[in-house]
Length: 464
Image 1: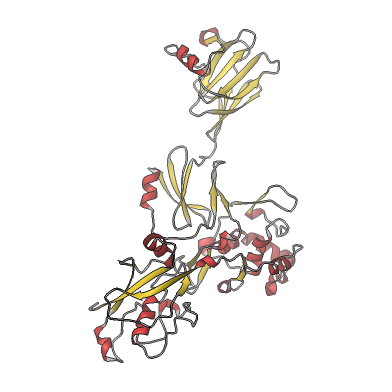
Image 2: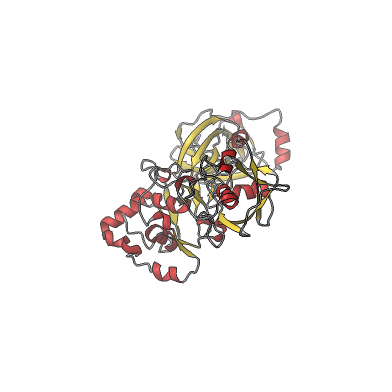
């Protein structure tokens, strides 16, 4: 009979026969009176559940499709039957060698097709995309901030595609992914969900200053709750989100004040605009799952929200979307570092000791180069660095307010004789020249690789 574990059983109403299936991919019908078993069919996946209905039996496996097979009546055909015993699996397999029974049925009488589940996944380094693989071997690339498949690669090596899409970037883990149910479940929880930021220019957001920082979790929540917010405004009026106050039964303001680690995202301007990188589909909308106000899981599609679910959403989620406050806004988004001349360099600058800047900033936008140039050659102090050693936002495009310095850190001709040399500045870490698109977080993770404060070096390169 079975050569491996039995995972599912179903009996006839009179308990005269028993259907069994399991890990060995086989469905058997056993006569309890005679102990004769008949192999009804074999599957491609382990059998998980059985359900008798009329003259058929429905079989569910680890595959997402459900198949219906003939129940074969009450009198198994003698030709394909054999006596069921109580041998161990190993002895059962040995006894069947050379005399494997032939299944009665080759094809199911009915099939309810299911969608391909997910058997493997990998979150990519940019923390906006992840790869998935289904049972058929099809590999797809998903975008977390829109909940859609952005590219399908067909049957492709998962490991090879993962290596191909590798980027040397470092973004904090602001969400977790679960695929145990065969589909994608993305979990957001405070405070770690608010730890990831990117520049609007790097997200391709048009009409927004390129140096504006975009909090990925906040914009994702805005995209998910866009329909809810529209319904809420229609139901309660514009006063429901005016002046940063929430008109709901949930006292968010009082709870927010009691937490010290609370920050208002000044760049978002408390607007409800959803930017393209965070627009979710209304054709195949995702569902939101939370504990709800009554306890236990609560689930709705984002297009089914009617604006009355204030009590069902976590308070920190409402405070983010309605009041523009990020609870537990982590201090880890800033990175401390030292700026020193390369060994043997004759050029020195007057540094301010330890400096700090957002982890996401590229050193081309961080104004490290401009800072070095200004400290070397300008009479007045730099306007890119505050008195406390933190880098100021500056002007869009990475330019400072000094006309003598170009946006790329090189000198412009005119004004002073030494500018005709047109030197350029290189920033290094561990004797490695840094690419302009490396953020502080990336440098710290892949180049510095130490728990101590990051140390950056600079040198002047002539003739560029």
